[in-house]
Length: 289
Image (tube, rainbow, N blue to C red; front, side, top):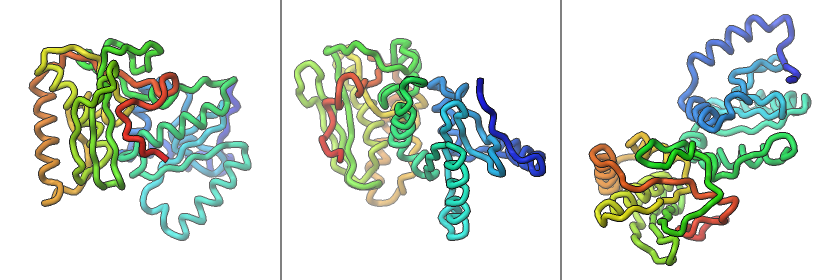
């Protein structure tokens, strides 16, 4: 049974109205995070805009005392920073662990956010077995997977390709590649060009799917990127990279990739690379710190 934390009686009605308004009008970052929680069956464990004391938590898991806050730009203001410190101190005093992310982190570095949440949940393994980072992927549509439901398989096929990207900065010099899992041979390599890691992960998956179809081959394509798989599923690279003379060529490549997804039915499935069981994906550039 949950121990429900709620507000002081004097301010509850006012906070309740505000929390209801916030649920109906989530920020884009809150929507992205809630979508991930739903697709990974965590939504029944988390509550949105939940009242604790005289505060409203963006997301809270009451059983495991975990709060996730998604902060907009105004949180950088000095007064708001002090308020946030007081808020965090109060919540931690109630026994909660508080994770704070900026809107930009949730929208453009989703994998890192997801990994941190998973690692925090893993600390209490006796009460909630946490999926590894690779298991946090969005379930692919029928044309991109084998009905895995987004869960990483514990059985790895060697008749497969794997893809990965690397980027020095965000944005920065980006490159991606594909590797044959059976032979370790590099199959293709693109870059470096000015871009982002998410764009590279997206293009790598599409590059692999298009090449496999052109060659008439059927291979599993492994990726460890939550964001890239989401973009491939939606057939749209939802990037905010500034479009200018330096990035125009990359934007043309993105447009071709999106067009290919809209006009072709991939003949190979995209699966989650199970980092926890199998280690780092072989297409990795080896630049993680």
